[in-house]
Length: 450
Image 1 (spheres, rainbow, N blue to C red):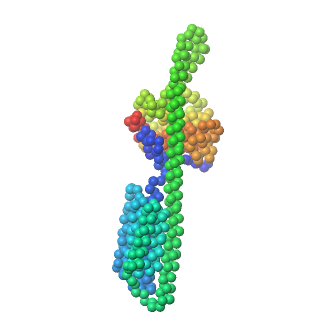
Image 2 (image 1 turned 180 degrees about the vertical axis):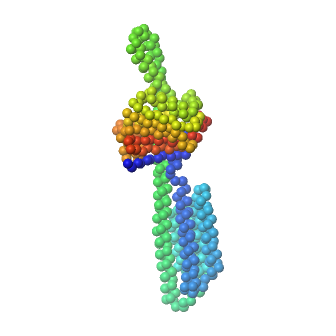
Image 3 (image 1 turned 90 degrees about the vertical axis):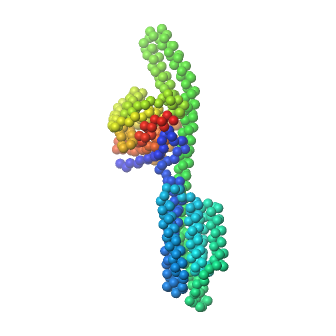
C-alpha cells in the first residue's frame, strides 16, 4: 500500500517564538540571489573560454596581431574574480543586490578593456554590453539597472574615441566588411543563446523565490488565524468563568438540602453535575493558562514519563476508550515543566484517533536521540488522499461539520513552534500520527514560563 506522509517542520522553540515564525522547510531568503550569483559565475567561465577561443582564432586563424600579454592579463583577472566569487557564494552571508551589481560592473570593465585592446567601438563584440544590461534588468533593482545602462553607455562613448587599432591584413574594403559582418553574426548568436539560457534559469530562480514568499504569506495567514482563535477562546473563557462559579455555588447549596441528602440518586446526580462543573472550570483555566494569562498557576515540574503517564490516564478516565494500548518506553527520563497547551495538543490527537477507531487506539512513546517521539495509531478507514495532502490546514477535514479540521491545525502549529515534526500516514490497517518533539524545547523551564 502506498504511503503519503506530509511533514511540517520548524526550528524555533514554542515559548520563545513569535506567531510570525518561519517554516524551516522552505529555502533561505537570499537563495535566489545566491543562485543568480552562481549563474553569473557560470557566464564568466563561458566568457573566459569564449575570449580565449576568439583571441586564438583572431591571432592565428585570421593572422590579425593582438596585444596578447595584456589580453591574457584580463582573462587571468576574470579567472581570479570567479574564484573569489565562488568562495563568497559558499559563505553564510546573504548575497545582496550590491554584490550582483559589482559583479556585473567587473564583467563590464573586463569587456571594455578587451575591446579597448582590439579596435574599440568598431569591434563587432561591442554589442555584448546588451547581454550584461539584460542580465542586470532581470537580477537588479531599477536604480542598479539604470546605473548599469549609464556605465555601458559611458564605456561605449569612451571606446569611440580611445582604443588601440588593430592591423587588418586584408586591404580590400569588401573583405573588411565581410569580416566585420561575420564577427557581428557570431556575436549575435552568442548573445542570443546566452540570453535564452540564463534568462530561463533566472526566471526559474525568481519563481522559486515567489513560491517561498507565497509560503511565508500562507504561514502568516494561518498564524493570524490562530491569534484570532486564541483571542476568541480567551474572551469566551473569561465570560464563562462567572456563570460556572455561580452554578458551582448553587450546586454546593443543593447538596446541603435535606431533600437531596435523603435521596441517594438525586445526591449522586448533583455530585456528578458538580464534578462536571469543576471539569469545565479546569478547561477554562487551561485556556487562560495556554494564552499566558494565568501561566504561573499551572506550571508543574515533572518528568517526561510521569507527564505522559498522567496525561494518558486522564484521557482514559475522561474519554473511556474501549481498548487503549499504551506503551511508554522513554528512557532515560528527563525533567520538564508540564505545559497545558502541549497536553491539549496530544489530547486532540488521541480524540481524533478514537473518533476514527472507537474500538482500538494504540499509543507508544519513546526516545530517539534528543527527541520525544509519540506515535498514535488507529484501525479506522485512514485519511483520504486529498485530506492527507493538506493535513494541518484549517477546516481541512472529512468530518463534514463546521469547524472540522481545527484540532489538527492547532496541533501542527504548536508542534511547529516547539521545533518538532508532525507527520501522518496511512498504514496497512488504519492510520498513524507521529509527534516528534525536541527535548530542549520541553526541558527548558525558563522558556516555558516566560
